[in-house]
Every structure is written in structure tokens, then in C-alpha cells.
Image 1 (cartoon, rainbow, N blue to C red):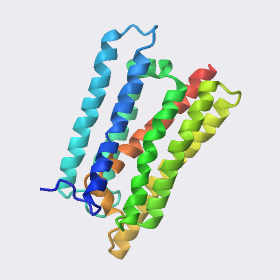
Image 2: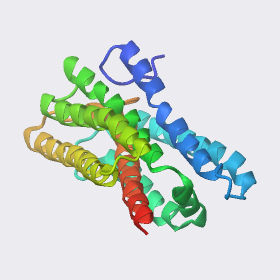
Image 3: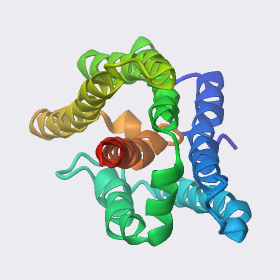
Image 4: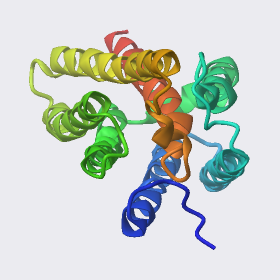
Length: 243
């Protein structure tokens, strides 16, 4: 039985699924870095929290997969069901729970700004938008907006992180500009997806329903909420460094 329900070749689905595991471990490693600072004395958390993060996202991915198999997401609706049942709850979890924990703020204070920027390298998975368009699974406009925007953010993250590490005189300004552009990119992708869903409802076409099928459904379920959260973390970190 093929667990992949999308219309691209199976090797694309497998490669995508493997690639989309990387952000989980990058986030866990980022937390570990923040906990490993010499002046942070909560050593039990240093060992436990990264494992909890991996377990949390592992369970979350499983939930998204099972929900996609029910066919609940595979309907053009406003708001898109996949956002309603996955991305929105995850966003609320980030900002109403994680943001209110003392541990989060301790980690954010200790972690390096360049590490917060460098983690956006995982957005290279945006290349799968382009691959989806190549196999006629995604509309060209959406694939190019999401794909090239994420690829640009990922590649420039490497440059910006390097400038931060070198402590060039303008690194705060360039980081702020990059962060705003990166945030606008993900918001633009969300708006495009909603617009194309509405257009699909009006014209009785498929729109971006390919993004509701496993494993591509992990993109809208995980990426928008997480990327926005990470960008807000960078804004907060920049403000901390000014104080």
C-alpha cells in the first residue's frame, strides 16, 4: 500500500518526507544550544527538552498524516481546512503557550542571533514547490511564489548569519531587513493559498489541494506557523541585544 497520496513520483514524496524531518532536529538543536550556555544551570532541561521537541513534532506530524488520510483537508473551503485544523492551532500553541514559558525566554536570551537566522536554511524545501509545478501538481503562480521566496530566504540566511558572526557594523540593520522580507514572504504564501482556494471554489477547480495530501500536507501544517514564530523570535532577539 502506498502511503503517499499526492500525484508526484514516489521518489519525490520520499525525498520530501526525509527533508521535512530536518527542521525538527534543527529546532531541537537550537534549544539545546540555548540550554548549553555556561551560565544556564538547568542541566536536566538540556538533556530532556530536545527529546521532548522531537517527540512533540513527531506526534504532530503523525496527527497531520492521519488527518490527511481521512480526506478532511481535501476540500476547497475558506478558511482552508488544513490551516484551520493544523496551522492555526500550532500558531496558538507557539504564541499562547511557548511564549509564556520562562524556559523559552531563557533559551532565547542565550542562543546566538546567527543561529536563529541560520535555521531558516531548512526553507530550501521550497524547491518542492517548483517540483510540484513541474509535475503539474501545483499552479505555477503559487509554486513560484512559495518556492523561489523560500529558496531566497534560505540562501540569504547563510549570508546574513555569516555577517552576524563576523559582527560587521551593519549586521543588525541587515538582519532586520532580511527578517522583514522573510516574514513578508511567508505571509504572501499564506495569502496566495487562501486566494487560490477561493478562486478554486468559484471556478470548481482543484486549486492548491495537492498541498492537503500526504506528505506535502506537512508544509501548510508546519511551515507557516513555525516560520512566523522563528521570525518573531529574531525580532525579540534583536531587541534584547539593543538593551
